[in-house]
Image: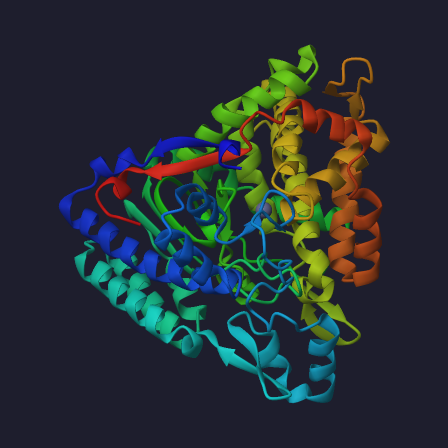
Length: 519
Ligand code: ZN
């Protein structure tokens, strides 16, 4: 399993920081570590004991594997146990009692409607108390770790010479202790002219595969690349037009806030959910729909991470799986732009929807289907906008072929992240759909894939429209049956994946800062 991850050295950019910023980094890392300790408790009820047992037994190899996956479940293989004597992973990780079923949870809420909000909260654990189910807020369940993290964030704020960053770090410290993240999410949106970038808190809900309600803690600490940030900011000017474009594909009522700052960073440390298994190349946060409406979202692009993945994984995959005519068009720039547009696309489209006279969110309406539908929407919406930016003359026409061929190579990279995982599943759906329509071709003789440029544009538009419709309708059954129709790997896909088995699936960062500070 360890061989699937190419070790890379990251984070030398820390050398460009002045003494004050280094102090900010040191404290931010300490806060990140406290949240990392919580994430261990969130992934599986037995994870901490297992890790400590392996460390005590000096079982280095197994310990490395468990550290990489944050538990005994292979994140590349649908969370199958890779150690003996380990139970099947509970779908709800450790957010719910190990033996609680979906039906039991839903029955409890039907019988106790007053508990709904606390039970569906992003930041609560569900536990048993005798024969009752009870919700415990994170601030209580993880009081010690959160206290340490808050202290470290305040120390980072004191060290910072950037007022907007200090404001965020202080607000975030408060949020960790109160589970109220709205104000600090706004403060995060307002951070500017910073050279150190800190993103910390409970964010993504992928770890909760039972309902997708519960957020996992994570942290990213990076050094801002001001020049690249300014370059990419150009695209953000078109965000409003992009939203109109999507609304034209499928009318939906509510538009999100248009502001969309983009920051390019070089990662110097990550922790918790961000560090488990496959590394994040970019993120679009916060997830709170109220913040989307008030301020939009901020995209953070991790350039050194993207570059390492492109070199270690994307290029070797393309060399073996793409037709020779397409091969030369796989470029880092097109790949990086696709990643950015994927993130921009996350912040567009339906968010709140009207449903039987009441308002809900797409996330809640589509439940366990939401994550994969939303990832597919972000992928395909992003590719759709790549073409649109070329049509507008914002990007040169010479970008057209690289946009699609780099995207094609990306399918195989993502599917290898796990087939039921949101991104992997979304990519199988997209590839199957585009192949069915003819935009992507598979040569049975060579086993290689290529883009059919006479078809791909229309097919991408059709799929974008379909995915937006699924979100705007908020029809759980419709989303489930569409995704299940396309989410099975074909024999050709299986054969292709087998031919690249020895290519690294992803990278394993060895951060420069960890040479001096122990994890
Ligand atoms: Zn995404």
